[in-house]
Length: 361
Image (cartoon, rainbow, N blue to C red; front, side, top):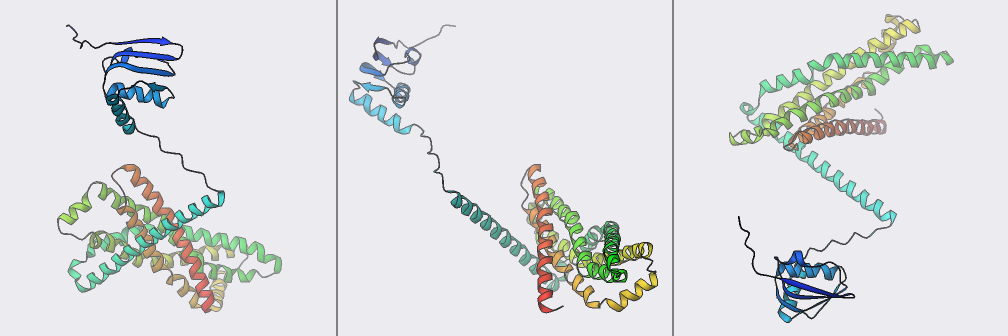
C-alpha cells in the first residue's frame, strides 16, 4: 500500500529566541513545527489553515509573540482564538458568615420544598378519600384489607414485644429511683402515664415508620422503575386511588390498634416487673392503675395515632414516587423515607406534648 501525502512542506530556522517559519503551516505540516521560540516570524508563511492557526493560538496563549502575519492569516488566527474554550474563572471566596448564611438558606429552601411536596400528597390523599366516598366503586377495598394485614397484623408481634420490654425497663428503673424515697407504689403511675400518654404510641409509630415507610418506598419505587405506574395511567387507572389511598388509609386504621396493643403489652411488662422487684401484686397494680390513671391519658396518646399514620404513609408513598430508573436511587429514597418518617413522628410528638400542656389536657 502506497501512502499518498500532499506535497506540503514547512521549514524553520532559529536565531536566538526568534523562530522563522517558511512554507505552509497546515494540518499536514503540524508535526514539522518545532518546539520553543519566544518570538515567531510568520512573514514567510504561504498558507495557513485552521489547524495551523490553532497551533499558533496555543503558542500565543503560552506567551509567544507572533510577528509578520499577513492580513488574511491574522483574521483566521483571530477567529480561531475566539473559538478556543476558555476556563471558567474560579468562584470568589466569601466570608465565613456569608457561607453559613448561604448554606442555611439552601437548607431552608430545600425544607420548604419538602413541606410543599408533603402538602401536595396530603391534598391528593384527601381528594382520593372524598372521591371514594362519592364513588365507592372506585375504591379498592381488597387492597385496603391487604395493606391492613401487612402494616397492622404482621406488625403486632414486634410492637407487642417492644412495648413489653419498655414496660419492664420503666418499672425496673422507676423502682430503683423511687425506693430511695419510699414511694415504690408510685411506680404504677409512672408506668401508666409514660406508656399511655407518650411512649406507647411514640415507639409504635417509630417501629411502623421504620417498617412500613421503607416497604412503601420499595414497593412503589420498584413499580416506577419497571414503568408499571405509567402503564396504570395508560390503562386509565388513577395511581392515587390504586397506590396512595389504600396504603395511607390502612395505616390510619391500624396504627391506633397497634398503639392500643402496645399500651396493653407495656402495662403487662410493667406489672410483671413491679411484682418481681417490688412485690406489687397484679390485683394491687390494677387497682392503682384504675384509681390513679385518668382515661384522658389514653385518649391523648391514641389521638396522635391518625396524624402519625398519615405522615408516615405520605412520606413513604412520596419517596417511592421520586425513585429514578436505577437501583441506587431506590436504596437512597428508601433510607431517606425511614429517616424522614422517624424525624417527623418525633417532631409531631413534641408539638402534641406542647399543645396538650398548653390546653391543660
